[in-house]
Length: 226
Length: 387
Ligand SMILES: Nc1ncnc2c1ncn2[C@@H]1O[C@H](COP(=O)(O)OP(=O)(O)O)[C@@H](O)[C@H]1O
Ligand SMILES: [Mg+2]
Image 1 (cartoon, rainbow over the protein chains, first blue to last red):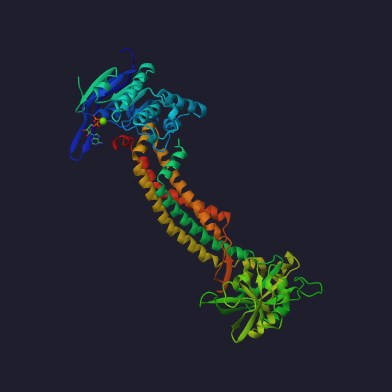
Image 2: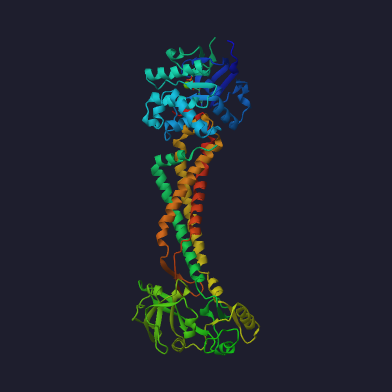
């Protein structure tokens, strides 16, 4: 445990107001994740896994508590700054892939790069490298509907890693996939953490998927176990 | 940083039904706008096309139209030999005292009647209006009850074919030829011999005097001499200027055009708004995904505004194309100066088209503003909620 902490969560809570009652999605969670770690986040449905992931990825804000990623307190960023921060720091992999249906695989992967200074040949090279990394260079001109689920998710991973972000988060990325595709996707995530040194957070309720990680933590009713 | 345009293009293509409906709506509005405005432009053009820069028109002070002007023989005799007026080879002043009469005649294709302007004109008057030419038949012979009518007017008034006869009052006139006014105000006139016109309509006075002046300075001198002569309650002004001021008729058309376009554009704005709201609704998760990837609210906002403007621009171009065949199409209306039938044509200028396109884009932008704001306000979390 010599690597510096990448994610530091302290006493983080998230409470949803539902009419009269308050739903406590996260209850004073504290967690530190180090660089290069592949953390598997497990727990039953409704235990707050996604909520925690969204807060770490800067997609949602906690009701109280701290969330620092690479030394930056996300509370201090406004909407635009947070958008820029997500672009530069987080690769997000969705359970439902979330590719833009009217754009080709190449164009989908290129999307986050359009927000960077990268232009022309350098940008093309980077998109192609990302597609090669997930083994889909030959499908670059396919639309999402022309791809299988597993291929779609690999395109989504290419899109998440194309900006070379230090943090990759995946919310049940294998939930909609067959076991072979799921294995492929998890292998790619594992390789990213092992050889590219990325910090990976994987939300899953499948113990076999969780086994790809270097550490597993369990959530239950918004609280971290042990 | 903006989203690529092809993203918008493909989205509008995917939603082609709504896209076509919106485009057609905008096209209709733009076509109506352009067509009505082209009528006003055509009318003004016909006025501006009329006259010779070497001529001066003299009418009674306070008369805006020749038909309401009167000039006595004494007044005419007083000024016709003034040195400011040019002379021909035989030393005769090049000047014509015309009489303009309004008659009521049946229309060609309905039982309704139209007021038609008959100009009793002298040989000098015809020489002073070189843009008028004979296109069928022959010119009238002085002393005979013959007329030459505008070819364009003949398309709208009964018994105006060459060889036909029509009654006015107790007299019967024979059409012996057709004239063409080269898209000027003369396209709305019937010409006959001046003395004959004065005799059958019992006119002692003239309506107007048209004179060739030696040069521009002489024209100005003539005007100021008439102005300062107490015996002449008249006004002289360049013929070109007289006609270009005859734009009163175009005004209500312009107002009508603007009113119609405004009313219809409200409909088009709502159509565009509806299309884009539906699009935002269908693309909620997509918008959230873009936000997760790092796109700012501003990018989402401008992307939807661009999409609305793009749709409307295509509609605008289509509207221009739809209205284009009407260019040059001859039509008529009632003059607000003389209440006579005036013939002119739809005139679609590039500037009018440009205005139509700007108008279309404005409709698109207004229509997409609220949906675009809704899209921009979506939080990134919607990328994950609605699966
Ligand atoms: N937008 C929301 N409004 C109200 N309650 C919510 C909302 N999002 C999540 N929750 C609640 O928060 C709890 C945690 O949800 P979530 O983090 O999605 O759980 P998990 O991903 O572990 O299944 C659940 O009880 C869920 O119903
Ligand atoms: Mg979840």
